[in-house]
Length: 71
Image (cartoon, rainbow, N blue to C red; front, side, top):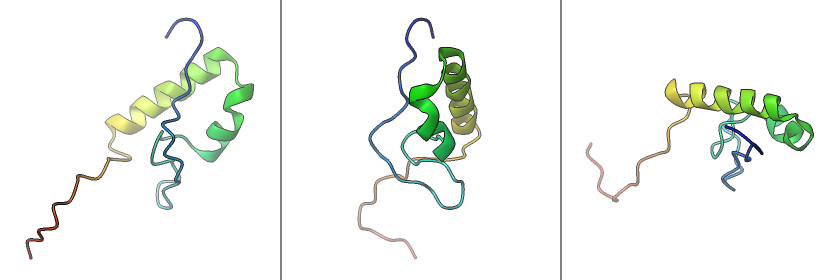
């Protein structure tokens, strides 16, 4: 990422109680709260952490339900 580092916020601001990560952007509360004050290199580090969290399956977007349930 060169230039200005974009925010990972996806406007889904909901914290997962088990993981401690936002369900929308996979950031922690300190990462979210500190974003506006971070230097670009620190922001890039947060992005790398988000990518690693996503690759590790820390949070997966739930699949849409059809209403049919297999018991």
